[in-house]
Amino acid sequence: MVVEEFLTGPEVSVLSFVDGKVVKPMVSSMDHKRALDGDKGLNTGGMGTVAPNPYYTPAVAEECMKTIFLPTIEAMQQEGCPFKGCLYFGLMLTPKGPKVIEYNCRFGDPETQVVLPLLESDLLKIMMSTTDGTLADTEVKFADGAAACVILASGGYPESYAKGKEITGLENGQIPGAEAVIYHAGSALKDGKLVTSGGRVLGVTAKGADLPEALKKAYAACEKVSFENAHKRSDIGQRALKALQ
Image (cartoon, rainbow, N blue to C red; front, top):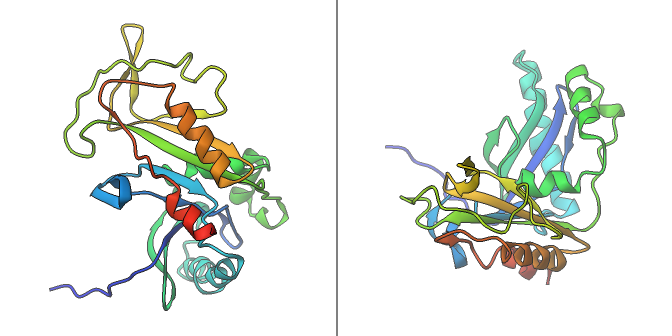
C-alpha cells in the first residue's frame, strides 16, 4: 500500500536554464491537461498553455528560488552529478507553500511553445553558457506581454483517433498573414498533402501585449486551419484571466 499526501492548488510550470551552479528560471506558464472544457475529460499531454502564469507572483518566485530551485541544484552538486541544461519544475502552489510535483530534464511540451517565443535574449548563447558554466554572466531576458497556445487535436484523443486527415489552411506549414506560429506535433506529408499523423496535431501560438490579446490572436488563427474531426478546447487561459481579475 502506498500512502501519499493529497495536494491541492494551482499548478505552475517553470522551465529553467542551469549550468551546474547557477539557475535562471524562464517565464512561468500554465498548462491545460484535461481534454475537454472546464477541465473535464481525460488527461492529455496538454491541450494548451499560457505564459506568464498569474499565480506565479514575484513573492512565489522568490520562495521557489530559495526553497526549491537552489536546493535542487546544490543537492545534485553534492551528489557529484551537477546538472547542466534545461530543468523543468512542475509545481503546485498549495496552502502550505509551493511543492514539487515533477522534474523533467528537458523543455516541456506544450509549455515551451509559449515560453520561448517570449525570450528576447540569444537562445544559442544561453545554451552555450549552460555547458561552459558562464550562465551567471549571460543575459536571460523575456519580453513583457503574454503568449497563448491552443492545441488542435484529432477527434477522440487521447483515446483512439483516425489519422491521415488532410489539413487545410496552411502554406509551407504556416497560416499566411496570421499573427501566429504553427508548431507541428502530429502532422505528416503524404502524396504532397499535409495530413494528421498523431493525437495532438498542431500547436497554434500567438503573442500579445496582454493575455486577452494573445488568446484572441491564437483562437482567430485556429479558425483558419481545419481537418476532419478537429478538436480544441475553447477555454484555454480562462483560469488565468480569472486570476488576473
